[in-house]
Image 1 (cartoon, helix red, strand yellow):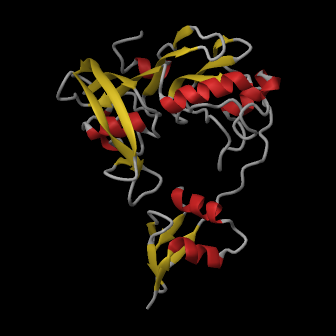
Image 2: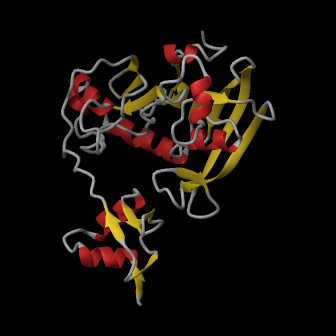
Image 3: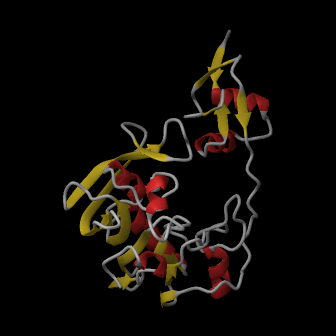
Length: 299
């Protein structure tokens, strides 16, 4: 019995694929070893191990404009701020080639094509499909460069979310600082990790607690923007976001009236420095209707 690195085994099996492409498949959770999602490209596998590879369908090279209505909060020659509705995917990806925010933006802003790249023009940050609220998009190359630097360094960007969570946090406010990375077993989930993660910081405050429903309204101001950050952090407090199908509690969701149709997380406020005019700007997105029944703020 011999052992080898997984990435070398995959490279030998799929010689037409680049090493980076194969690494991407592992990192995205598309490679299983003996029925368990592979944790890293360099993991050791035996010649008797069963290795399964799923190949997602390719994403079209260039998204096409589509006349999808947009809730524009602000717009000038350099940037546009959108109040994204729940259910709208930000950019094309496997399973969502059309009907995305990018498709809508290309129709609304014909000159956006090519700003910062072909596949995700103007996109400097993102929201989960079922998260509603504010997202800023660059419309010019100078704005793309400035906003990309700001979001990468987390400097001069203030992002505040509202979340409806099950239960009541033990404290009225707190700060969570740890590392978030891919779950060691399920690569499609994120988790708090000791190594191979990135620093994630969430400052949270209890706004209200509805004892009858057993849910809390929590304000979350994030200093970093890791994938699923608020959802992972609130679940770590024992108060997962209502309607969260990945980190939540479906049994508790079913007890609510009405049962939530999506995760009740809303990008509520956004403050930033204009990347070209160098002036501070602040925006606020009204609480969406599907969250109003659970909130005691923003009505």
